[in-house]
Structures are given as C-alpha cells and as structure tokens.
Image (cartoon, rainbow, N blue to C red):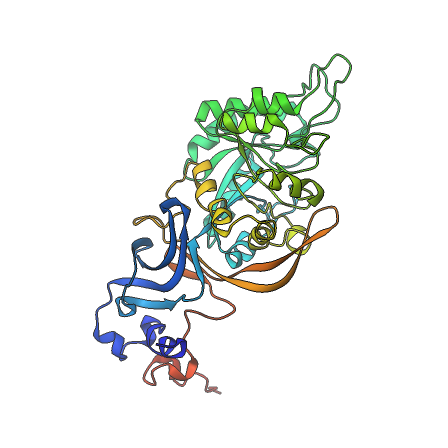
Length: 436
C-alpha cells in the first residue's frame, strides 16, 4: 500500500470516517502508529515496530498491528518513533517578568518532540502557586525543580540573599506537590562572601531540602577562589564532597567548570563523581556549549547523562534553538542516534524518578515523538563562536501527548488528503454560506 492509499483509508479521523470501510470494523485502539523504526532504549528496542495507544496509554507494541484496529492510524514508515522526549532543564515561567526571561513551553517543546520538561528553578516557594497556573493550563507535562530561594530566579535579590534560602518552606512546598516538584535548584549564588554570607549557603540549603524530601538537586555552580579567610569554593569539593548520588550538575560543559585539565585531558574528578552516582546535565542555553571544550570532552567519552536545551527567551533564536537541534549537534559529534535518544528519554526520566516517562512500555503514558532524519550538509553553532558541520539533522514531524496528537507538521501524517475525505462527512457540509 502506498502512502496516498494509506492516507485515503487509514488516517481519517473518527468523526470523518463514519461511513467508510474502516467504520465497519470496531477499532481496538485510539491510534495505531505503523511501520516506524522504534527506538526505545528503556526496553532495548531499535527496530521496525507498530505502536498502539488506548486511553492515554501505550497499549501494545508489536510487529504488525492492523491499521484498521485504530480509530486513527498513522503511517510512520521511513521515520523514527521514540518515546516523548524529556527536557530536563528549561525556563518556562513566562508570566513573571522578574525571573529569568522564559519561553512558552508548549510553543517550543512540542514541535521538537518534547512532551515533558522540567522548569529549572525559575519559581520558588513564594511564587510556585502562580507558576502552577502555567502548569495547569499547559498542553504538555511541566515539572519543576523548585528554586531553593523563595523568590525564585530573581538573581538580583533572592538567589543572592541567604535569608531567602528557606529550607523548610521549600521542603514543605515540595511535599505539597509531589506530582510536580522533582527536586530543588541552586544557582547564580556568588560574589563577595562573609560569615553572614557563606560560600556554600545555596548548595548546602538545597541539599538539606533534598534530604528532607528524598529529592535530588539541580546545581548550577561557579567555583570561586579564596577570599581572605574564606576558603575557596572548589569544583572538586562540589563534585566529591557536597553532591550526593543522584544530584545533578547542570550546564556541565560550561566554561566555568574545569572538566578538562590544562593538558586537555578529562578531569579525573568528573569520573570519580560519576562513579559515586552524580549526574551530569548539558543545559545548553546560550553559554554552555563552547566547542573548543565540548569536542575534546566528547571525544574522551564524557557525554552528559541528560541532554537538555535550557531554553529561555534568547536561546530559540540563537545557538540553542530547541532540543531536536541540540540532539543533532551530538549526532554531528559522532554520538549514535540511540545514545542521543537514551539521554533525552530514559536517562532524564530516571534522574527525576519518573521511570514511567521516557519509555514505550505497555501501560506507560502515550507520549511519542516521530522524527525524520534529514541528510545533507548542516551547520551547528557552538556558544561563544564557531560551528561544526554535520550530514544529519533530526526534524520532529509529529508529537503525541497523552494519546492525542499535539503537533503534526510539516507533513500532516495524521491528516488525509482533502479529496479522499468521504463525501458524506461533516467536512463537506456547507458551513461557509454567509447568512445576511
């Protein structure tokens, strides 16, 4: 069956298919996605399979599920089918002008195959209820690393002020929202230290909140030298003494981290930290992908456990663009597609203790991304200047969230050719006449 024949029979939405031949067979599933190359690292699948969805869950994954068993059927032959991506770090508190300038998650994540994102600490305990209004009306899943500063990411005030590092308040807020808050964020704390403003105040407060709740921390950290009688705040102490197993270093390839030694070799402290269970997140953003550091690190096998975009207001139009673009950069650097998918699905889901996400296990949420692998010559920018060239580019062509199609461009895989819609459907009803 060619694609046009498939479109003319199998992709007709239920309301338009009442009198079609498919309507004579009672469908077993809400949707069947057929013929795609399924890559699901959580279940060690990398082969051509069909996926059936029912009631917002993955109902079946098999070699040949008849298209007629789905109310909607999608021909994904020639495409890659993956679990919905999990972006571990973005900024999406766009209704608060006082915090990090943010994006609308639905607008930037769904078109790149992301069905779950974690806000990286733009909201704190004082404004979490306000941020939750965005979460509640979003078309995708938004989770939160709650900022240990009660004010959220107001770097001019709360994140720099130890009096705003309210551990009990943060922990209690997390306990009240266990379905949304997946950890605590520490970041942007630096400058002049003193007894009243100790160098580790933000990190230590976050870890204490983590211990009270059993949650990890997402740490954005800058090493600083000795200040008078105040000891240095070192990368080694951060990795090997402060962070616990399961805690996350975000912006892990940023220039402020000495993950490479002066001779260009990988810092052994990074390896030791990984061995003790510390996780590393890319957090691309606008400053954390300088190629002169990233390339030698990746060549030595230091690939972040999670590949995240850290979208905020500038990144969609500069070097970050979206998660699919960031994934393509790793392909250009020689990382395999399966490994890239692992670090944008299974790995981040496990890091935030949501193993039901980032997989296509039967019973898991019906969150799916469909990708085209474009071939050609593509340029990918690093932060701070420079670019790399690659011959592959991942392009999301469909995103399914909670069993429903949330994005379907540029090919309209779920949409029939207009002339193939049955003539007795509502599509052809005369609803365009003006009534004067």
